[in-house]
Length: 392
Image (cartoon, rainbow, N blue to C red; front, top):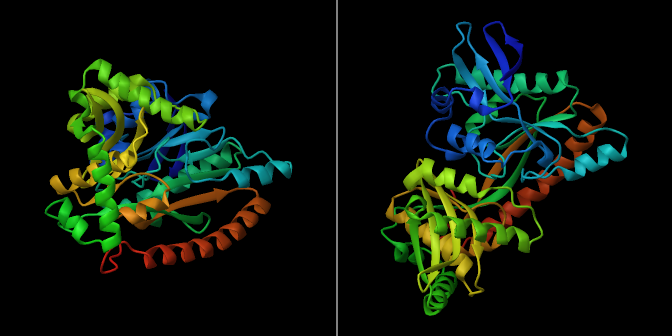
């Protein structure tokens, strides 16, 4: 059911929805496009319907749509009221703690993002509209106005693509960080990729793959929808075990894994390690457009190099074979640099209402940005490629 409407400007009206199922799936997907599966109606709706998004976990859907005078959908954004900062991967715990120590209430806040998914992608969804720049600005303005009308401390937009940035005016503070992405240089096979690396890096990768091969495990990439119910349950159990080992709370249900397999077909791939036919380790991938996205991993066996084989090397093999242009294996992990993944900038925008908090955050971000620029320079200086290749 749609929440109360509010004006956006003279030609558009903003509506807020407590479920994405209140928004027509075809109309949403026409705005989201086909290049990024995480902003699809199927992915976001699956999170809600399969019990992954819950108020007690700090997530309450509050999706934004903009409508023209005739009622047609002009633009949209995935939006949530957040009672904490879990599952975001753009960390603002320090901001929250400082403001609460000063007597303020940081939560709830408003967040434009994809839950549990540190994946750059469109957040201001406008399709191929000729007035896309104006529509993105209208979405950003509507989010900020909604947050202020509700008396919230702040509104945030995480993992933005470059096309979205023009939608945010100077009232939004800019932030960035680094991820590690692999880029296809028209490689004919994995050996061509290895040939582009420095000798030491190439040797290390070959040794890691040889160790896994000698372990007796059978490692392959397979469509998720080709697994039977018991095998998919095993995959989910491995995902749960990884979170348990790290003392974290796993939020994705078996029902959601089944939903993804049914909805995404070939676009959902699993790198599987089997021993005597039984799955003992896995890594989960989604594909959108020309990009492969690595997401989750789990293993029952401690085999040296197995994590790299399933999470990175089989993904690179798959991307080369399918002529995909990019492989994004997930957040963090400087060890990815040695395995052919180069630093790529991720971007977020933050509007903060209390003047004192905004001033403090702006100063903190200024220092953070300077430090991160040095980090990026250092990372690129240690490119694993023989000719010092950099990301485009």
